[in-house]
Image (tube, rainbow, N blue to C red; front, side, top):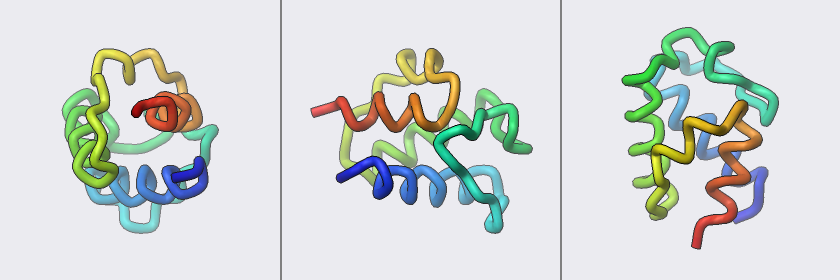
Length: 79
């Protein structure tokens, strides 16, 4: 998957977990920009991404991602 494809999955999962179906996510989006993206939602988002992408995403590493772009970089670098 390329970055754009991962972004589409991230956007879908974040929309589902924050109950914001019209939400537009970019690589510059930060969790604090999204109403409802709190620590519990973050855990659900990461679990949703793991399921959708069939990858094990170390949640502790996701806390260092300052925006969606960095999260995508992390995901893209996983084998």
